[in-house]
Length: 396
Ligand code: 3PG
Ligand code: MG
Image 1 (cartoon, rainbow, N blue to C red):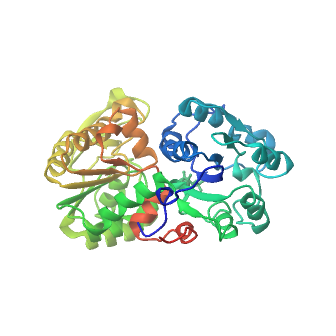
Image 2 (cartoon, helix red, strand yellow):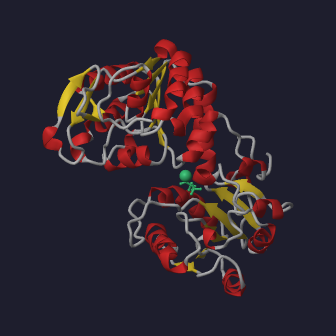
């Protein structure tokens, strides 16, 4: 990597290391952490800082708080702090503010080997505005800046850009997670073992236009599943019954189909139901979806076809579920694709967000070459959008 990483820093003894992580984890309504993958992924960096005799001032956003203290309670970092403490096996001191006297005192009192977690950065109105005054207050807390927030690298929040900018002259490096994600994605983008198969699912074509275009330029086949396949089918003038589709994106879907030519595979059969919440009505249809029926997953012939393509691939990159996988009766397509990747001897890369969650839920995450912690960041990097946050990290 062209950027300095934590490995390039030799003397962290007694240093206060400001680490921007992405602890924006899935939560239930009470704010309990329902998946701690992003916290686990940041542990090597935090641990390395502590092992080297530094102290860690850890900071992240969590969710999208609205500025209403009552409604924002679930977004407080306390439960994240507890989980970090469990995973790290050390005490984590958590402050209730992002900046201010309480935070400064806690940072000052921090000793080698200790960990401090700031309150949700987005509780401060300056974070998402990239506010320089907020940034200089945060910057003053640390001797070193580490960006280990891969999942947030596509954002311009103060902690991602203005803080490292304010720390110019002090060491500013990428953490272990960011370095690992970038290495794997750079390899995928430059010289992937061929053939390369992309698997693309999820609800909307419109969310992933640039990603699809970028993939089409790099892969040998794209296997489409999820609700976006109904938009493509509709664009071809086929019937899709009551299936979810983006009626205003048909021109775009046609453009992508033309661009992809015979690289693009659409489902040849579907699992359909009459009522979404009644799996007992489920049946398999081939080809088009008749009126009165709703597509919820790819069908068995499609599963076999896609498994075959994954089996032949030397590189597989996957983003987006194949169906409404959160409902068990409609999860077979997504589950079998996850299994196909797990069985593959090729390089298997899974994009973050709900695809990563699905793979984890099936207990197959460890079988993949890489499961990204980035949702939007993963998509943007593969699209070729440079991360502004990386420009604020020192060159090697
Ligand atoms: C993410 O999960 O995409 C990142 O943590 C960024 O969060 P955001 O989409 O709310 O900016
Ligand atoms: Mg996002």
